[in-house]
Length: 235
Ligand code: MN3
Image 1: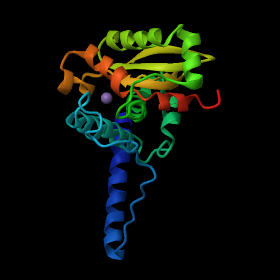
Image 2 (image 1 turned 45 degrees about the vertical axis):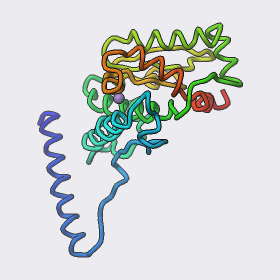
Image 3 (image 1 turned 180 degrees about the horizontal axis):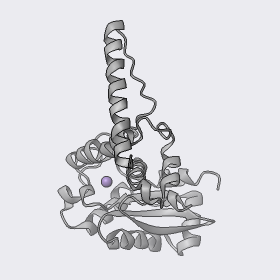
Image 4 (image 1 turned 30 degrees about the vertical axis):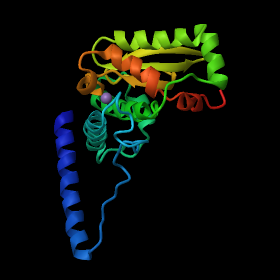
């Protein structure tokens, strides 16, 4: 059997098995569902309208409930009945990165992880300037905070097509990088501190084609420097 037939066969088995569980649950008046292997987005850390006017409640709703949740659902479906079901998302990303036969697994796991990280990279009334150790590291790596902010904005705006811009820790210094589609710094040994989603679904309802306006407003009004600092840990 080829891989597709295998997947279909294993899904059919899972379906039949699930049906038996449902039937037996109905008979015993209890719920037999085992949910430890299904994936879900982390809870949104604020209300859907909390990022307005930069990101509307409508955009947050579609982005979180449709796009983000779909990656989690697809990942759960892909892994159902396999040995990988229930493994940590970071682990799934690392084991599938660069593997031609695991592209769907990588894309859905990485997009699930990237979006969880994106929502926490923002907060209502964010923006401002970083403080403490992060502020010092930014000065060492970029010369000034303004230069760091400029590089982040230029990188986010110049990412061709769908993707992400990131502030990452690589070794002992900070860097701004961009990744295409689902790609993520954790597949490349870098430690992310912040990210912005520049797929069109992240801004099109609110800013249409003006990605630059979305990126500036993200940096001025939403970016969560406290979260970025917390990612440094004790490094
Ligand atoms: Mn997105």
